[in-house]
Amino acid sequence: MIKEQQFAKNLIEFIDKSPSAFHAAKNVEETLIKDGFKRLNLQDKWNLEKEGKYYTTKNNSAIIAFKIGKGEIEEDGFKLIGAHTDAPTFKIKPNPEMVVEKKYLKLNTEIYGGPILNTWFDRPLSIAGRVSIKTENLLQPKEILIDLEKPIMIIPNLAIHMNREVNKGVEINAQKDTLPLISNINEKFEKDGFLIKLIAKNLEIEVEDILDFELFLYGVDKGMLVGLNEEFISVGKLDDLGMVHAGLNGLIHSEVGRATNVLVCFDNEEVGSGTKQGAASPMLRTVLERITLSMGKDKEDYYRALANSFLISADQAHALHPNYIEQQDLTSRPVLNGGPAIKMAANQAYTTDSFSSSVYKGICKSIEVPVQKFVNRSDKRGGSTIGPISSSQLDIPSVDIGNPILAMHSIRELGGVLDHYNVYRTFKEFYKL
Image 1: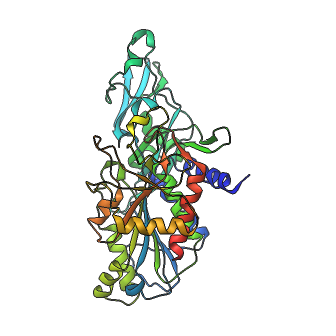
Image 2 (image 1 turned 90 degrees about the vertical axis):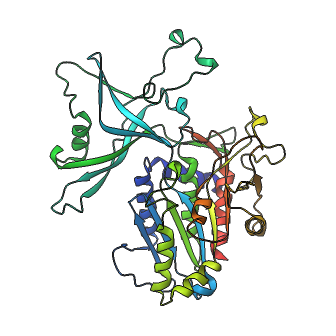
Image 3 (image 1 turned 135 degrees about the vertical axis):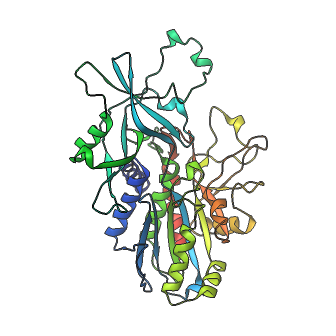
């Protein structure tokens, strides 16, 4: 098997083990620990050493890992890659059990982010997230990750015989049409507190010990390589666990240089980043300042370090769709396996400017990786990402890049095997500089 395909399969395994942002952060943490990174708690005093490898977490769904450089931090700065751990899905509401005609049990959910809703129909689904357990300290409940793994629910479509216009496009009501069916019920079925009891049984704990939960739906179908030559990656959460995976491997496989290398994986990008673990929070800014102070530097040195730093905001980009070529820009049309794309927007939805674009293009050229550019059609409003939001917290030069993918925000997205390997190569090279 060629190295690009093996790396893609490793990505698929990583994503399949990351059914929620909490699991994604945990999988990143486990990889870091295996590579010798030391955990830092935010409430402790930090004592850092040059060439040391460290990480810290926030909310157990965001994680920042870094290698202290050999140089002086105020002169050599930080080299940062940013991505996010969350993906569009459905979140289970409190008291979610709903009985229909005394025969069906379904769960009440709400949309998280911006999923393509119709891709979630008729798919085997499961539940994953975290559960809070009571302890003797009321201010410190215990958190346990949970993944039911089994396909325990499905969102069934309405038959075409009852909805003759379905293939012409039908509006989907999030409160009515997307609630998952979980079971038949009868007079002996204990529907009250069904989900809490299911959680308790899975975790082998008492129902009374469960304080609360944050649970999300996910598709249990495994990712795979597809295409005549297995050149494509078909998997959920490629946006943005693909960049988390590439950044993580770039960090652990890079040698320590003069600068301090940082990987930051935010949470809640899909809902605006306005949380304590999101890109709009002071989380990253605080960690970078604490690194500087822990190295015996002062506030002035911290600001000097920022001025000598660079950020790659790594999210995915939109590839030219073979069936909808008119939806892409007229001249900038990135394709699958054509190389990572630099994302640009006149309205500053992306942070890229001519300076930062030149930096990333230079990295790509130095290792012979092809590079593309993405801009939206002028008559379409595009999305944004963590780059501009991070810039509101840290005035660091930044470029927004991503691999071109198809079906972004579908329950299964499609990316390129070669693209994923190449973007990892650019990250590794960036950390070496």
